[in-house]
Image (cartoon, rainbow, N blue to C red):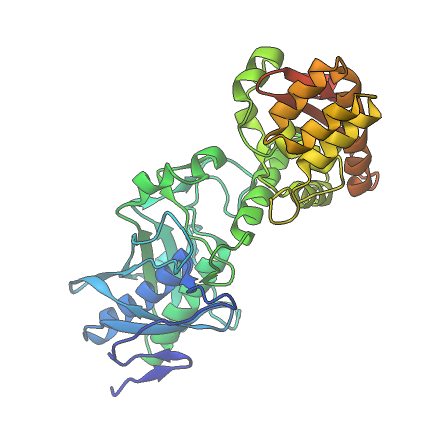
Length: 409
C-alpha cells in the first residue's frame, strides 16, 4: 500500500530516539497514555496490513511527537499484540520500564452497543454502519475502578479519558487509511502492573488490580509537581463524591500514632497534600467542601504561621525564625529566642520554649497565626480548622472547632 505517514504519525521503520529536554536540561518522558496509544496504533496497523511494525510515531496532546519502539510483537489472524516500554525520562516514576501492551482484535458490528468504551470518530459525528469504531478496555495489570469520584466510573478500567481519546484517534486514523469500516477491540494490559500499583496512590483511591493509564499532555515533565497536584485533586474529588463535607488534609502520615491514640483518628484517611497546602485549600473550595481540617507536625505548619502556603524548603524555610518570634511573643527570655535560632529542628525549639515554661502561650500564638492565614487563603469559602502536634510533646495546639470536625468522620 506504500504506507508512510498519517498526519504526524510516521509509519516508517527508522530507528527513533527521544532527546527532548526541558529548560533545566532534564530529559522528558512519555505517559502511560502515550505508550498505550502508540502500541495500539502499531498493533492495528499490523492487524489490518499484515506487515510487522517495529517503530511508530504519534503526536501527543501537547503537540510533541513521540517516536516509540515496538516490542513483544505477537501476530495471529484475528489479533495482534505488542508493547511500548514506558520511559519517564529523568522523572523518578515507578512505572518506568513497564511494558504497556495493546492487544487489538476485530469486532462485529453488534459490539457497537456496548458501554465498555466504544468511541465516536475523531470528528465526533454519529456512528453509522459505514464508520469504524473502537472499544477500549483494560486487561491484566490495569486497575479497575471501585469507588466514585474518579475519571472513570466504578467498574471501568482505570484508563483515563485523555488516553482513551488518544488511543481512539490513533486507531481510527489507521482504520481510515486502510479503508476498514468495522470495529476494533483494544485491550491495554501491563504485565508488571499489579506489583507496581502497590507503590502508587491507586490502593488509596480504590483502584484495584493494577496501575492506571494516565496523562493529560502525553508528556512526563521531570520533577514536575503537576502529577502530585492532580492526585490531590483526585483524592479530594473522590471524598466529595463519597459524601464528605469536611476536607481532612495532612501533609503526610507524620504523627500517625499520635492521632490514633489521642483522637482515635486514622491519619491515613486524610488527603495527603505534601507541601501544597495553599493549592489544596483552593481545590477544596472549588470542589464545594464546607469545612477544611489541616492536621500536621509543627515542622510543616510553623511555616503556615508566616503565610507560607507551599512548605517546600526551596520556597522558603523560616521555621526557626517564626518559632523564635512566637517565643518572644510569649515573653520567653531573649537567650531562649537566640538559642531557637541556632537549633536544628522545631522539636528542639519547642523544647527550649518548654524549659522557659511558655509552651502553651507560644503554641497558642502560632495557632492564631496559622488560622489567620488559613482563613485568608480560604476567603470565607470554607470553615477552617487545624491541629498541630510534635513527636516529643504530642498535641501543641488546635483551633476551637478542630475536635468537632474530627468527630464528623
